[in-house]
Length: 181
Image 1 (tube, rainbow, N blue to C red):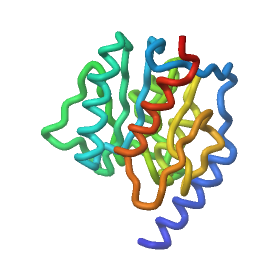
Image 2: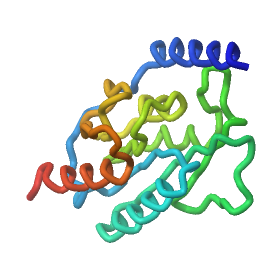
Image 3: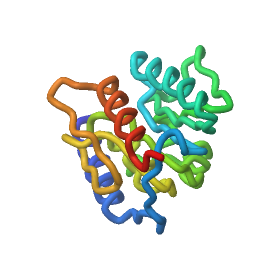
Image 4: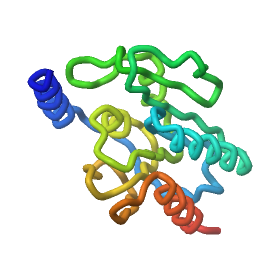
């Protein structure tokens, strides 16, 4: 099984290097002025899921249209999870050998031209990195550190041991300062 995982990792890295970012005009946008926000995250972690749900409610207070895309490392969605208007999910079963998803939810998410895309992962994620890279969002933000940040327009440096909670606080702080009117 370990050999198979290594082959998948190699294929994923190879595909990721060959994958092109879309042509887009990078535009730094204040969170209060964003009309559309996309959030990509690992939904396996209940704490992260809770943080994302609270942040979606917060963003709606600014009248932003929010769409999230969560990944479950399972073959099927858990029974207690139901996709809703703002929340889409995809699962391991929809991944190719190169760890790219062919799920319609992922394609729809990538094609949306969000004002801001928030990558809420704090570590290298071989699956969600494709979503972030291929997104047509005007301003991509997330965490720096152990993962590659070439496809982010703005990255927060996290200290060792800091997680999604600190990332979201940092992003919220800086996104309120950018282009403040």
